[in-house]
Image (cartoon, rainbow, N blue to C red; front, side):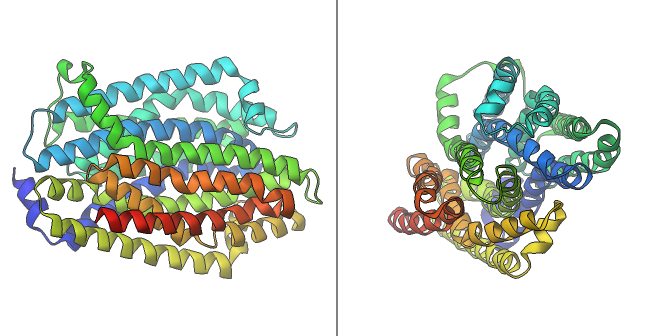
Length: 442
């Protein structure tokens, strides 16, 4: 119980640094799996191969989203129960979260293999990249259940008061992937990128699984994995915001892939340049968003504990710090994206001036108001942390619903540029609504 007093009495700024920095590192390292693949693939094979990895991206994000659905839900339930000194339900939250995450992974793998290339065509593959997308994805699917379980365990480990251990697990896996990528790609091409990724994911999973033998607030047994529907419903409600955030990334990515191929074919850029450029832009967006999410999710155990302990002033101080840190990071990133966009685009390779021109213009426009997007997501995660699931879930989906709507409407008058204009328009409206909701909640 010493840890409970620590979360309730230590300065909130110090606690936030201790929990959020490892969480940010973990999330950044997690998304580096796909990003590192694309950097090496783009430079060693070409931008068409980048488009191929981008086709598989929505499937992996679905897995990630479901793992957060149960993992973040279990972590939030753990933190709130800990603050209330309710120790009985913690081990069942963890066990049930692990059970449903693994079974969901099995289901995703089955659907992906059975659907085959039909699924890839449906989510935006082209004649140029379908074969590479097949070769990359069919290897990556094999590790999906354990990769999802590792991601859920990372959230639970952070909530258990060991954010650095969670970060270490991610660092080891990412290091294996980064070292293995150039070697494996040079031997097996795009299949090598997938092979390096699954070896890294397997290493991270083993490290996270080993933690279960020395956890601080729970001890798992066979009874922990027996389905408890009441507890599962509570866990799912707390994790809904995380799931919706990831699912709408998938939906918007698929819709944008289809629109970029459609409107790109009618432009001087063709279908593959817009698709490949958008994949790169989304990766940069994902890095910044993960920093913001890392700040908010890192604060989750502290917020949940203090809310459960009814120390509401500390909860409000944490919210202010989370918003401040997120705003500073996003403003710095926006300045860099607007001032030196070529530096970021060239990291992923650029085979033609036409591609570079399109990618630079798209980057500047699509990420121009990323500070609003990140602050909006952070507010949804905060509400999730204090158990306000009914408010958190709609806010998580709001920006992405608006983005989908504008993505479908804007290109009809603006052509392919309309796909990129949709993002700042959605950011403005979503932020306005979120501000009103947060004022009422506080």
